[in-house]
Length: 146
Image (cartoon, rainbow, N blue to C red; front, top):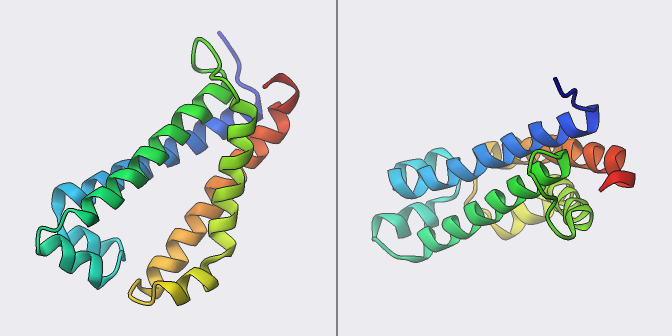
């Protein structure tokens, strides 16, 4: 039986969170305006989805795609994939940075997106911070082998 290092385990948990976040974004598209409102995406996005505009779906699908890509890189870094993806080390460094930056930048972002609820900013920033820390720890501890 293969034993996972704590770094690989952190990346596996981070990958799972990224995958769940991607699926939550896809659920918004499938469910529609109620899901956009529930997830705190803002009334403007919910109304655009109600009006059947393509933009909310495209933005949300793009975010889901990026999150799924990040899932695959975390799995690669954890050693789950048969072959490591090219540039995994640097991709994981970037992913960690983006998650952590998103977490701490919420006061600045909130001003640009005033329609998003306070709950959205608090919850999503906390989640991004946790995922960022998992990726950062996994990347740091596996750095020599990536």
